[in-house]
Image (cartoon, rainbow, N blue to C red; front, side, top):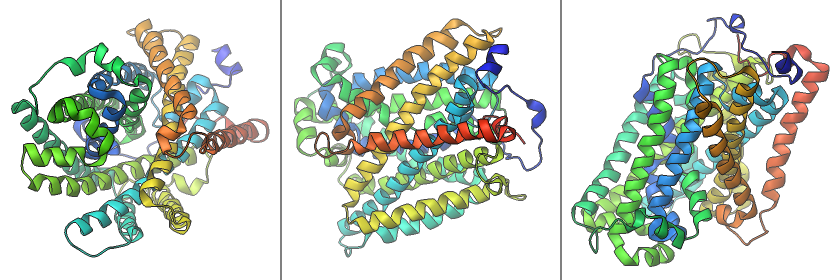
Length: 487
């Protein structure tokens, strides 16, 4: 424990926690799993991202999803083990503070909030554009995306004010619709043998190697984002020591299987021409395919369900962000008012309102910039994705650092605390570096045009480090609380 004090790593002070003003709830495994899975917007992924995975990975893109699922299972092993021995609801913030030090943890928390805000703001733009396009596709008038983004913001912000279980019910309903539509497509395509019969070639290493493996993995990892937020809801689940591990593993495996099967089905739906179709018209690949293999009406149903999917994603991201802000406020790294919990709804209502205001402020420059909504979405969400992937990599090394100092507890083993997080951490950090070197693949534009994004992300992280260093030298009372999320 002497080493921990030297490295400024917070210990677990359970006596500092009280039930006063604490978030509460009784979400089970399924509710928590669907709450975080809504973040990734599954049908929007199948409709908008899997075609791009096929574009770069060719027929072997399905193998890329298998590989990504295995990598994120390894991440989950270390993550869940850490959650068991560091029982705090701070997620990236708490884990990195515990494993790599308070200053690093606060830097990570600033980057996490910024990253999730980017994803939230970008998704507001995207849902506005999607609703506007949907109305036009039904023969309706042209409408401005900002109107629908604002309406979505109002609904999401209102729901975020209430207890998490209200959001969980809405997210469960949305997820069931999304998964059901995707499964209908998968069943019909595979049941009919696709366009040219079924083959196992997409599941081979050779097929995967024919495409651009690095770019394919970048896209497949990006579409899993969201499942890593399970530990944030620790105080709002029925039995955190069981619910969080089950929900984390369940989320990775469920969404992994869905994406593997759906990628295979989408590839099979076009047969040998799948790669060419992905190059020529990736955005219509899924909607067109379901119209052919199921029924024409399903093309329009897909467009409608994408809007539902994006709304669910907004609600999930908003709830994640609210809890990040709450935990930082509890530790006094942010104004104390954000730590208040609603007496009736047991929700982080002040933090939720704060997140809503910042998201609204984000939409104003998005409107004034005059940039096309689709392009703006790609840039902003790409920034957020790079931030989150880098933090997932840091968490892996925080797990290793924590157990290297404290020793391997009884019931654990080196595979869980060293090997699994090391493999996942190397892949995730490698993916982040590759994304930074090829930003044009993430946010669009010409190579070299978006290097300012790297400076922006490093600046946000540096501000968090600077604030943490200030607390260490000038406000030791606050510094000692960092990473605790204790009341």
